[in-house]
Structure formats: structure tokens, C-alpha cells
Length: 294
Image (cartoon, rainbow, N blue to C red; front, side, top):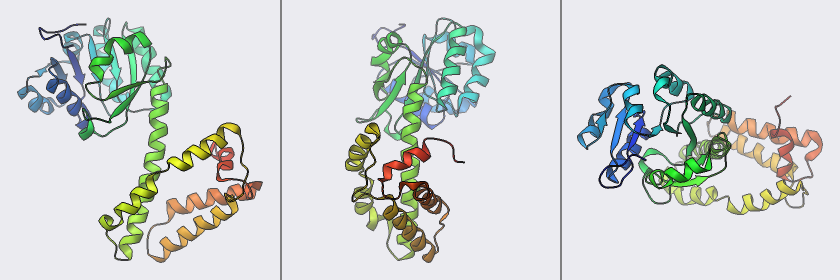
């Protein structure tokens, strides 16, 4: 690993959107020598003022240091940037913290390996303002030895959560969390709109929203049911929950709030009832969501 006199590993950061800037800034704050490159060069100005070195080209950025962190919009953007400089990839370690699909991550790893680079995939679990803050985390996958070699440096950004050698696994875990996050936050927007229509502010609703967002009990109970393939009903009956979903849709509609997403959820519940799961648990819907809709 290339280091300066302080013993800190040198890092190149390619891609200086909000996340890339936060990462490069965290490395600088921790005393790491940092080289940066971005298609719009001016995005590096503040980092350069703090001590970063601005590379003139992608090839120059890759040549600067062994460890290269990528933070871009998607893998198409990564390929567009790296492909013209592929000859400079040999001997580099690429840590791709760009969001995309697991299959794109696997293809990206194979492409980089084919050009002589070693490759880790990452899925960052926090927004840019929380980079470098306690409690933040990133999923990583790829060769274990590569991960361990650079773990200390990567943990300047967040805690490093290794999930296996398959380069796609970090994105599997990341996109799974995004599924929960975006579904939950869309529900929050509908709830806030409903309350706003009745004169209640989002701030007033905040304590109740935070309680509703704590799904630990349900995930624990239902996770066990899913792993065991056990969907017995009892108090948890899909037919009752379909009626509850209908009540949500009707309440939102009466308040003049958009119902497209809640109505789609209610339709899923009713599809489960029609498939014969009405007396079973909510978890029986795994049979429907686990495959494409007809």
C-alpha cells in the first residue's frame, strides 16, 4: 500500500457528487493523501483547497495510488469513465461504491479483473452527511484478502460490513435495504399528506411516525415464519389485513390524497386472498412477491 510519511494510505476518489465529496473529505480529515478526479473539474475546488491533489485525467488519477474509490451515478457512468483509461487499471484496487444491480456489479468486477485490477463492491447505507459519523455502515463483497488489506482505510468512511466473496452480494443487501427504505418513506409521505389535510403538522406527527417505523418485533416474528415456511393465521389473517388496506385507501381518498401506491398495496393483499391465503398470515404473500406478477 502506498503511504505518506504519516503511514496513512493514499487514496484516489473518482466521482465528486455529494457522496464522493463527502468521502474524499473524510479521507482528508483523517490525514490520508487524496487524489481526486471529476468530469466537472470545478467540483474538486474545495477539496483541493483542503489539500487534495486534482488529477487532470482519469488515467492520471488511476496511476496516482493503488486504492481507487469510485462514487458515481451508476455502472454505466463508471464504465464510460474507466473504459478509455483501461490500460491504467492493472495493479489497482477498485472499490466501487456506486449503486446499481447485483448483476451489474458482477459484470463490473469481471471487467475490472480482466484489465488486471482487483475489485470490491460496496453498498453505502447512509446519506452523504453521515459519512465518517458513528453508526454508519457499508456492505462490502469481493475477495476477502482485498477487503482485509484495505479495511482500516475504508472504515474512515463507515464501518465495513463484509458479506462474502460474490461481488454482487453487497448490492443484493444494499438494494434489499433500499426496498424497505423507499417503501417506508413513501408510506411516510402519504401519512404526512393525510395528517396535513386534517391540520396536523409533520413535526407534531414525528413521535408517532418514529414508533411506526420501528418494525423490529414484526421482522423478528415474520422472519422466522418465512424461514420455516409457516404462514398460520390466528390473529394475523390476510383477509383482515386486506380490509385494513382498503380503509387506508378510502381515508386517503376522502382527504384528497393520491392513492396510487396504497391502492397497489391493497390490490396485492386482495390478490393473496383470491389465491386462497385469506386465513393465512401476511407472510403468505411471499408466494406472490417472490415471483413476477401474472
